[in-house]
Image 1 (spheres, rainbow, N blue to C red):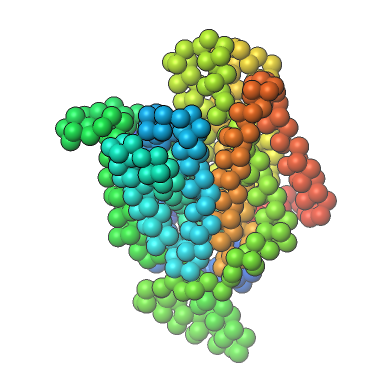
Image 2: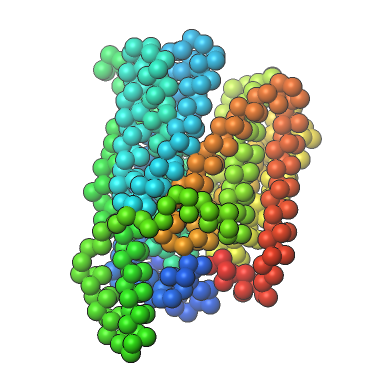
Length: 500
């Protein structure tokens, strides 16, 4: 995607994403001329020509469009949780301890649901998994309306946890964008879904403004109107995925991989051309249906441990997420302690969110062009620079604003290529489970980071918290060195081949 597109307003996210989807048509032809091989998956390597079939190209574009629309609507629907949800938790619980539990419930819910959703996707396809996730989030938003009316702490916590399903759906959606993506453009496809989440991240916390009008018209208690709007948006999101994500991208990929395997076997007997043509026709004429995954959870987790790329990518994802969440959570507290206004706090967090999402398409393009590993390592450098700024001048609003922007940017520069590397480093049948395990680990780490950051802040201060978070790049760099020693690629082209 061109820089001009990245710089456009959030309101243009969907149309800009659609333009980039259309650009994939030209990329389909370019794919045949690139030197980047297909994938680490042996099934992909054996015959990935199915990615160039017209019906697969149509399914690829349709899937990405649906994911972009769903991500915009869904991120708006759950966007009120970090702001309005915190205020509602304090209003309902009247206890800082319970309010803290309620605030963490969204992240805990996402951590608990990410892996089951991955298992569901592996067995029954993305459409069912994402529809269930967005639908559960809609139910959670409705529960929060009930909690506001009844002041029930239990309903409040349950609603926040169910709302976490929306976070899990947003994370799984970025992987769904790669199911049918051309190998040379997987990171870009993933980054587009991350990018359009900017709209919800920026506008979602402000749903309280139209929410007041809803409360007045319907006679609802204060702070509940935003979640009425959220429930409607999330219901529409679930319906969009259910009715529009046809055919299911995982089912299309599985059907064509089976066809490619059958064609390859037939080719050994001297009938490869006939079998390949017949197989492609069958796949085109008969809508593929998801079937039970031959991979179980134990085997999928074992593959993460055994595959160096997967281990490295998961570590980079989790540690970058912990560093980002830990510092971001305590930044408003630190700024307030140093006498800065709520306006400065809001600007700081908004700029941080801008760093997280606005440049994702550029990061994806860089990862596709230069390789996943170099971009991940560049992200470690950005995270270190952010930590140095926050350590040097924690009381300066200007320095902290720049530090938080770099923190968000570093998170993006690590997360986009690492997510792509994690997905492509394991066989296709294992990917939904491995992706779910990665998302669960990220959210669990985020919950622990948010809890631990408060204790570090109280005991040592914000500068120490920033320094400790910055030090989390050390394990990633150590793993990168080990990875390089074990792999010893003969050239940059060889590195790109392993990552493609």
